[in-house]
Length: 141
Image (cartoon, rainbow, N blue to C red; front, side, top):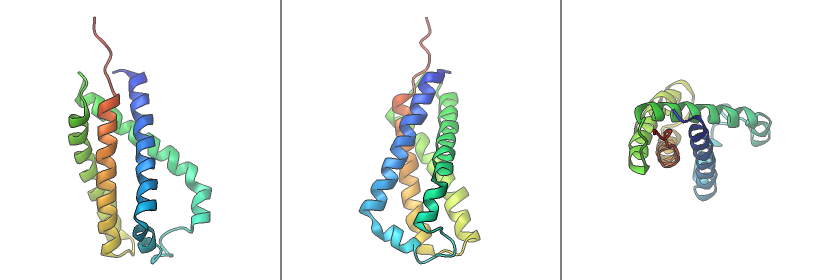
């Protein structure tokens, strides 16, 4: 496993994850507006800012773990297409283990859960593509 390439892939995918997230929040304000219907569930923006470093580090670690799994599955390297296929699997996992699980446990509406389903699914496909494009195995002599 090429650890420097793995780190770069995780870093690049983390940047892509947050850029996509910020674009969605900017281009689809209805997602933020929908979440504001649940003030007992979501922190106010000012309070979120105080714990954002935890979210940044946790997201990087999660993406690093995903990159390691990708590298284990593709020891010879890959590319955008394999990254996208991998991202679809991770996206399905995230939607089922996180979004829909939270829909059951948290007092949020189906509309918000479905909006999050779409956003997180696409976001993790993008993460997979970026990892697939950046990660390269060690060259063998």
